[in-house]
Image 1 (cartoon, rainbow, N blue to C red):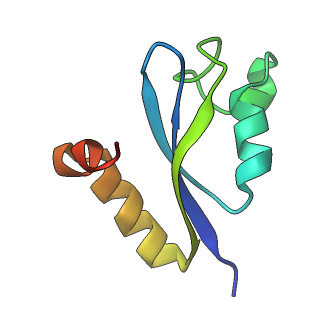
Image 2 (image 1 turned 135 degrees about the horizontal axis):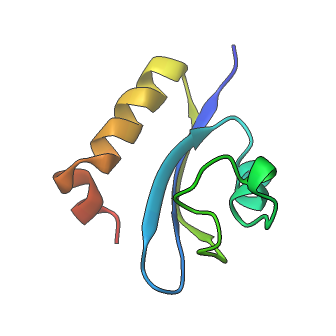
Image 3 (image 1 turned 90 degrees about the vertical axis):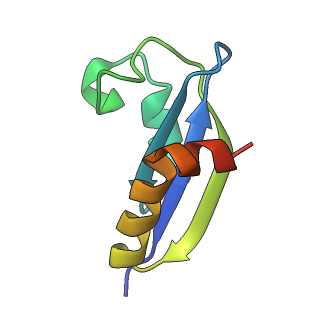
Length: 81
């Protein structure tokens, strides 16, 4: 069974992004990439460098999706330091 990591990254301006991946180091490198094709989204592109402020590993897919949604909620955002 494949496991997932839910993560929160932040840049120097304090902007945060919550995501879900199977390989956190690869995904962080993509967020910090200057190549728009590798970045994977417009929210983080050109706004880095990004660094991990919170991660939860070894989650099954349904649990990871639920946790990602919770971290994107108002209560979840306030819970991560």
